[in-house]
Amino acid sequence: MAWTSQQSARLRLEMEILERYFPSFYLKDSIIPGRACVEGIIRSNSGAEYVVRLHVPADLPNSVPDLEIVSPFLHDRFGHSLVELGTSYPMHLLKPEGGLVRICHYSASHWNPNITFAKVLLKIRAWVEGYEGHIETGFPIDHFLPHMQA
Amino acid sequence: MEEKDSKSVLNHLVDITKGKETSKKLVFDPHTQELVLVDAKGPRLSPDAVTADDPTRDGFFSR
Image (cartoon, rainbow over all chains, first blue to last red; front, side, top):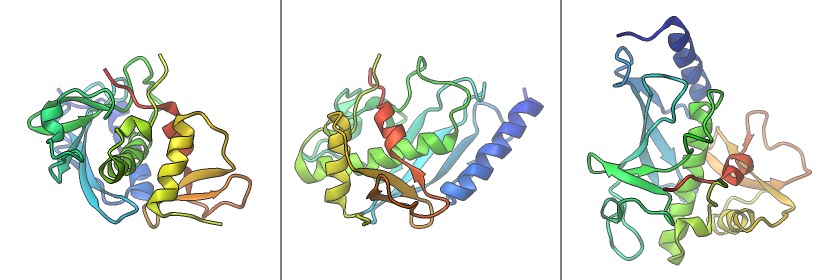
């Protein structure tokens, strides 16, 4: 199964927006719906770099894209691997898959097809700052970044 | 006045999380990839800068 013409147009639009706001991000395996992903580097204000992978949903733009931190391997302030924390409410983490940290950003009930990859990455940009705040202070990430209201 | 040191940015995020009113807003500058605090009523940082406050206020989903 291939992308529909509307999905292909949406992917092109997403990449045009990313080129403007997150120019390091590029599309991988774009031919195959369900395997395509967008990967690039998010840099914090401290200068630390995080490789981030956004999985393009096969039903683009109707589902929430999964989002992983590919590298570095993240630990909390107390030395525990974030992967080992598993699902973590205070750290805004979903259950890891493939040994990679997955970040909770939008719930399915808060998702709408107008939300762009760039807006998702903007939230991840804030999450990275919150993560570094946790490392610095020991407060959980939800001290810096709120939970979605039901 | 712009502020982009991590401490100022984090303090602003805490204020947002607590629902406090702030005189600053957080914007993302795509040219530097930095989050920058600017006066809420001041001039735009750059034509390409976008607010990072609103996506942050939306909150993060957690199971």
